[in-house]
Length: 72
Image 1: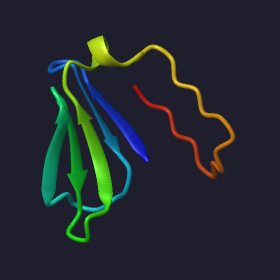
Image 2: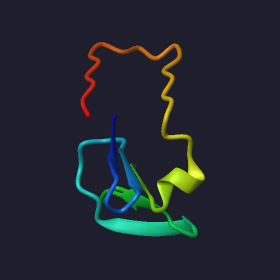
Image 3: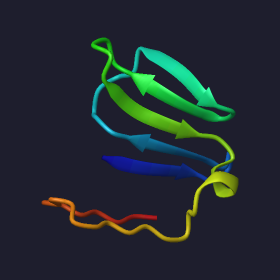
Image 4: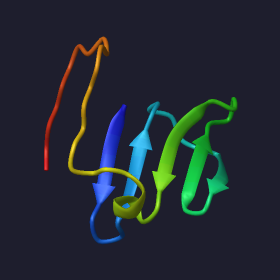
C-alpha cells in the first residue's frame, strides 16, 4: 500500500494494490474508489484532502509490515 499526497492539487491517492484501475466510482463529493477488471478495490482518490483527513500524522498499528519506506 502506498499513500501519495500532491500538494499542488491538495489530493491524496491511496494505492491499495499495484494493479491498474479500470473503473471508478465517486462515493461522496471528492472521494473516488478505483477498481480493477475483477472488481477489486485498488485505490482511493481524495480531493481537497487537507480538509477531509488529518495529513500531519500517520500511525501504523499492528500491521504485518515487512518493509517501511519514508520519503518527502
